[in-house]
Amino acid sequence: MAIVDTSNNTPVQDLFNSKVKTATDNASSLGDASKAATGKQSLGKDAFLQLLVTQLKNQNPLSPQDNGAFVAQLAQFSSLEGINTLNDSVNAISSNFSSSQALQASSLVGRSIIIQTDKAMVDTSKSMTGSVDVKTATGNVTVKVTDKDGNLVRTIEMGAQAVGSQSFIWDGKNEKGEVAPAGTYTFNATTKNDKGDAVALTTSLPATVTSVTLSKTGGEMLLNLAGGMGSVKLSQIQTIGT
Image (cartoon, rainbow, N blue to C red; front, side, top):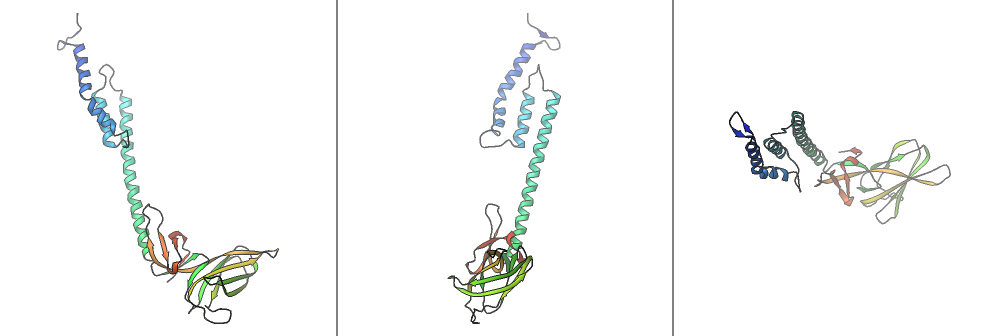
């Protein structure tokens, strides 16, 4: 004797079978939604919602979806939506920052900047100002200027210096008082410690920006310098001149 639903005379087994058939008919829909979470694709909000709806449509009629689990899944969907919105906002901020940085860097083309280096392209028809980073007070600081071939052109005696960035001036002349040819020169600053040993010091020299190179990978842009002095990062600039 079959068990019968007294409200409409439909066997309970038939009701259960119809649910199973519905689940089978919708299996392809569930499979399509699941593909978004596999392979090279990630689970997006649309696929997540499709999975949730398909799950509700195919739940076991004898053990329906628990309300707590349903609320938890809705909370996950809300979190996913919030994360996607946050990602869009961060990407927009990053794009605006890159545009602002590019505009700032482009305004430096043709201008003189001060960077930490030991080489400089010098116009010897006028004086050039550089600086030496003195770590500890010293009795004497010497700056030796050499040309591109390594020949000594001029020795600048700065004398005793206190701790800090100390400036020096080269008038563009050699030891004989003659104007040296314009070109690239190297500046080696040294001092002596308590034992009389030579200690190298860091120099900062002027350079002229000729162009800007934008990074294709989102990295920091580069400033290209005149006279084959190479490139420096925007963050390496110490001072911006005229």
